[in-house]
Amino acid sequence: MKIFFVSAAFSLLMVCNTHAQEYSEQKEITTTVIQYFESNQIEDIYDLFDDTMKVAVTIEELENIWNSLPTKCGAYLGSGDAVASKVQGMVVVNQFLDFEITDLDIRLAFNFENKISGLIFVPPVKKRTANPEFELN
Image 1 (cartoon, rainbow, N blue to C red):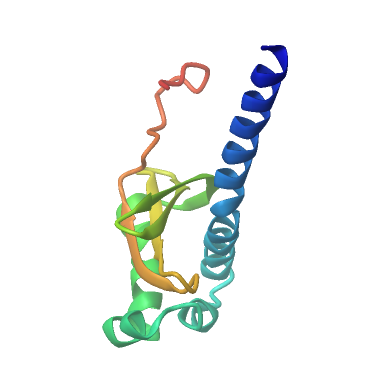
Image 2: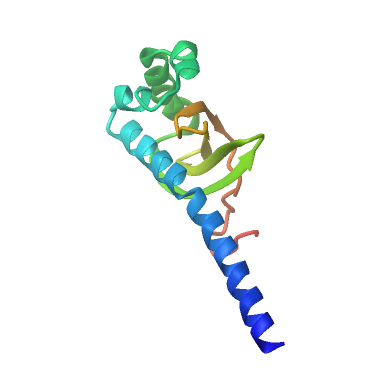
């Protein structure tokens, strides 16, 4: 019985670890995209797009979107944690973006080749509270 429990626990640990690693590459790409935005390397972001995204959004439009955020959200202060999940066969990553007035998440959808198939800025998955010592889970 003890061997079965240890074996089952190890198997569960391996499945969870594999699941976490499964999305690590997409989370790293998301962090890179944010760094590219921060340093105005818009063309490098564009290079990560799949063909559909390259048709849908030009480099200039992508740059305009990023540059317009401070007028609506306040000064950009930095980024936070990423949350990833599988949605309709694609990996979707939300990463927190901290702005002075209104926080956002950058949401990236990745195809099976880890190319960006979707990019949108949305209200954060995890909202900041008025008291930083009190976080809702």
